[in-house]
Length: 197
Image (tube, rainbow, N blue to C red):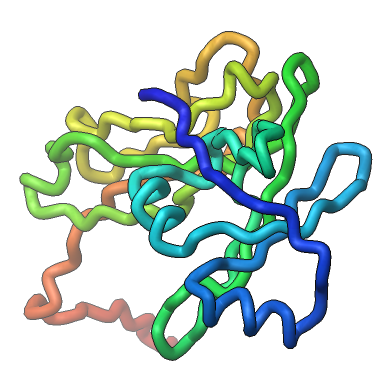
């Protein structure tokens, strides 16, 4: 997949009043945080951002072009309006080639588990893991095939197969997905009683 390029422009004026003016013009106020701690205030076209970032994950490295100067970055955070879900603000985090970074990578389940076909219940408690690697090795998402997962079986973080150079930060004993045997609610519960002497 080719790298997504977002065109942005530098914002000289700051503050909530300026942010409202930017939004009224159909743009999104944003900040690009550099690795050195330097922050650049920018804004992007709202429609262009929505169209270009439909299929990206939180660990997708984008190219943010600010007035002709390109920066490799990923979306660190987005603030949305709770009423219409429109994006109010974006925080980008710059990545440097050859310098390790930490990022959260989404886990995507693939396949139809045997245990589910046999009547088990699928639970998916861990939707993402934190990894450390070079930007070039950062996976956009981790696909996890659960086709062979049976009833009362689990897949742990330690079971993930990651590319070379990608180190897991998330604890290896955490359960990603499991299939529990569905309890028959109609069956009567038999309680054991201990006879008193």
